[in-house]
Length: 66
Image (cartoon, rainbow, N blue to C red; front, side):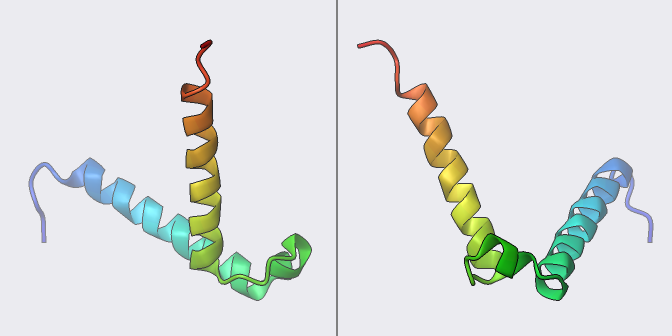
């Protein structure tokens, strides 16, 4: 099935899905959880990292001289 105008978007979405699945497999099948030492699941750890980064960026933007 060909959807006109969706070639690049479809390729980008497939790449994101493949990277997500590969990251999950590495997280689950390697000793990465023990090395980091959190004991959290994949989604919990990604959420924690995302929150940490967004808080850090917010602190950078909100730390204007004043």
